[in-house]
Amino acid sequence: MFMLVDISRTGLQPPDFVRRLYRTTGVSVLDAGAFGPSTAQFIRVAFCNSDAQLVEACRRINDFVAGLADCAITR
Image 1 (cartoon, rainbow, N blue to C red):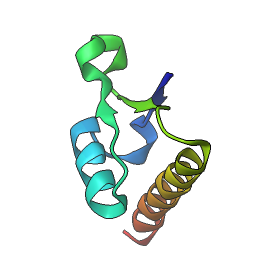
Image 2: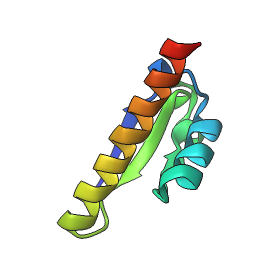
Image 3: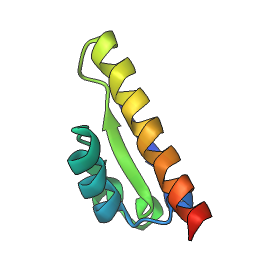
């Protein structure tokens, strides 16, 4: 029902990642840091929607992260 995803290679801290992801894509995930120090660089993704919604959310997350990589390359 839930998955923790390591976002340490995105260059963003979880609160920034969560906020920017939502503002950019409309996809809402949670900062997993509340689960302890071992999850400080993770987000929590819930699988509580239809398969079609989950596929679309994953596509949006993928595009968002790919856009972060593109920004890093151009810096």
